[in-house]
Image 1 (cartoon, rainbow, N blue to C red):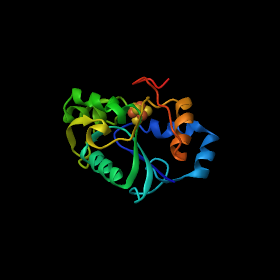
Image 2 (cartoon, rainbow, N blue to C red):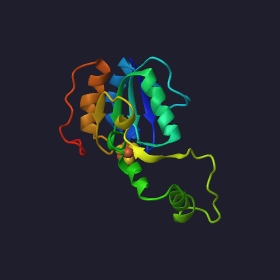
Image 3 (tube, protein in one colour):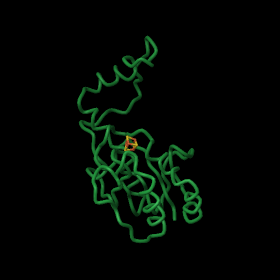
Image 4 (cartoon, protein in one colour):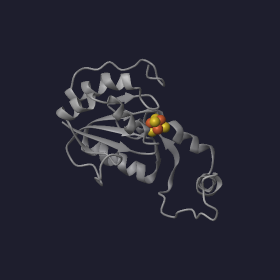
Length: 176
Ligand code: SF4
């Protein structure tokens, strides 16, 4: 079983939430290899033959879209993991302003920005809006929560890895 965790436009909190499995993570790793995750390993792109891809974050720019399309091609099952991936989440808030205003705020306006900061020119261009993962590719499972709750992950991740049936939350935003 090969697992990948892709990061799109989000805060990495969903990937880190997998660590909340604590000792159960050892059981998961005994049955599955994590072959790709930009947050926890230095692998540049997802390999072929992924069994389950967990995709976190929304699709806000062209790079997010390319990465989503690639992992969808290479994964048998794709899980939209977390509220950003399922619904757009906080990335959707960026649609309240223009790209230029957002960049000015992030690189110059916030208290922690250095005076005279320049706005980088190599940031991928925004798409015209933020998309949830399911707006653009086929999704096999939706796992909600910002980030998904530990007790929920303890039920679904081992089941997904073993191919057992899983029961998903009936609620749409909070996963309890
Ligand atoms: Fe971060 Fe929440 Fe989005 Fe996950 S759903 S990437 S925790 S903002």
